[in-house]
Image: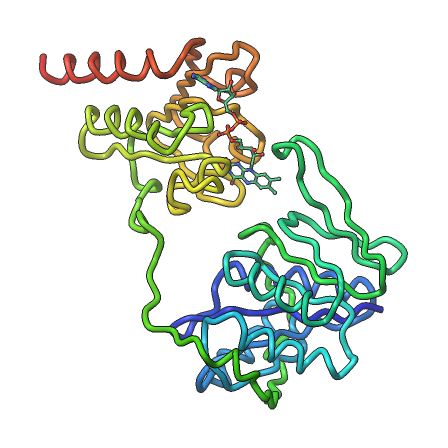
Length: 326
Ligand SMILES: Cc1cc2nc3c(=O)[nH]c(=O)nc-3n(C[C@H](O)[C@H](O)[C@H](O)COP(=O)(O)OP(=O)(O)OC[C@H]3O[C@@H](n4cnc5c(N)ncnc54)[C@H](O)[C@@H]3O)c2cc1C
């Protein structure tokens, strides 16, 4: 039997999607072992309804701690206080910057193992086994905990959101005495990542860039082509480049990003991994540029161009401009 404690991040009265996925995953895993999934919310004046709503995703109880919102150390204090009850075997996080920071902090505080960047979890002999992609996502490693307890931090949005619960969760207030160092930092302003407004779902033409662009600056070639097409064209990206910080998450296509179906989808330097394909395979026309003739993307492209994108994209941009002008 495994009881799982899941951290749920909330902002402006809503719990973020990534956390809802983690609660869904925690509930599913706990149920399979005959245990329970509880969620924890830390914030100022968290509403009853908001806390209880986690029951929809399978949490049977929600611990509500009054404290500063959106900062890592107070959450570590609160989770450590909950953990002290001895009721929990695993802590689960959806990932994201705060999830990574809190999860790592909690592991250090409790002296137990932590598995990060996890994309799936399964159960073997009643224990949770975390799956982590390695070698550029070409293989999956399995992580088992040496002890009976462990902390699992997912990749952002890796866990599927499910509504498996049977109604509102019981809400219990948790008393936490915060460490002096935990209350030194103050949240002054919360900003969104650059490019949050990237709208790829409404675009007619998408010029998507992958690792083959070589660097964040490589996206300029995609931007140039998209602006040559004019209104209705936008730039998108693969997860590899979003993870590398070359492009905002709002522009990510695929399993853990957005699903798109533009009239024209042009892939530049994208290998065509299955997790990317599921997000764009319904595009009307798929054109791919890749220097590797054996790249999987050519298997589902209407037109494949084998060559160096650094040479082809500028020529294509000129050709589109000439056509538009003519
Ligand atoms: C659970 C899970 C969820 C995932 N979710 C997503 C998701 O939502 N979206 C997503 O995209 N991925 C996702 N991934 C990652 C996915 O498996 C791939 O790792 C990723 O899509 C690869 O991105 P890429 O094509 O940019 O990079 P790579 O696979 O490294 O491909 C780069 C390509 O560029 C080509 N290239 C290099 N230089 C040039 C050049 N000069 N000219 C032309 N071509 C060139 C190479 O031949 C290569 O084919 C997920 C993975 C997992 C495990």
